[in-house]
Image (cartoon, rainbow, N blue to C red; front, side, top):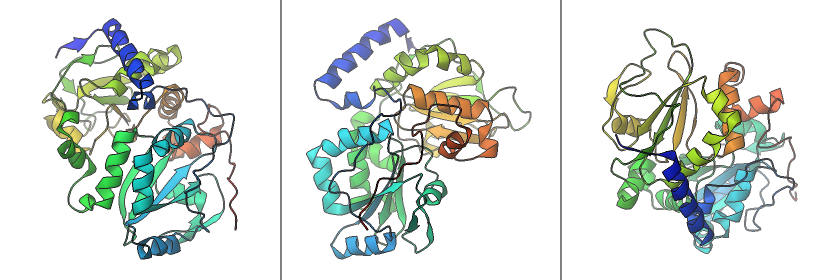
Length: 354
């Protein structure tokens, strides 16, 4: 497969940055993700909730809305700020969200009591862990019956955000996956196999990734990308070029796949397939998606949303230290170890009027 040379990609990335400056969604991908100095604030149209989500859902449905969105966030999370400053500053997203949903914020570190939409009592902190919110912001969409219609873990640019709102509000989640909805809704985003970026860290084909018969010597990272992908360009020209990222990456087997190509691959579970079919089976809808596997071929964690330097570095440490064996939740592991820059340096709840 033909691949772009990195120097060429730098020019493309610069062009993408110019597009971002002109007001496109490009600025959603490239930003400093170190923890914030100042605590972020919620939009004033977020619901003032007493954290009885079953009651919140009933109120929303009684008001003619499709359900509720539970926002899981952190006070100093730069990705959460991006959601507030970019997506929730777009009039069409705000208007559509308010018309169809109530949004209730949850602080993932808070010990405050919350009643879930199905009537269970827990804490905000344990609720976040139960829903596997490894990355913030996470948006969990509940339909009128209290069922989870869609989960978005991490920050997504406005296009995917708009699509997610429509996917749930219009009931598409009842009959198709979000990946299928995106591909069907905008064919321009479903690229034919195209040029990807070459990197000496990546393994060459054939891609024999089976780890079920004999454990490998190192963990595996599979990066699913697509051609003409600005977010992929930012990943390659930004975080992947940082020395403190490349060093731990050298301790992985790394495979790069075009998620729309028929490249033959044997998965870590020993199944013969193609990159396209494997991406479909994994439910992938965002490029680039990074999936980490252990030496036995079990998935550890995936990053299928916007990622920058700090978050990527922390995930690499989590995998290489085998922190997942002790703590399956990435954020809780980070808070317990205190050995890395966290997306949120400590539990600080935003006060609510009771």
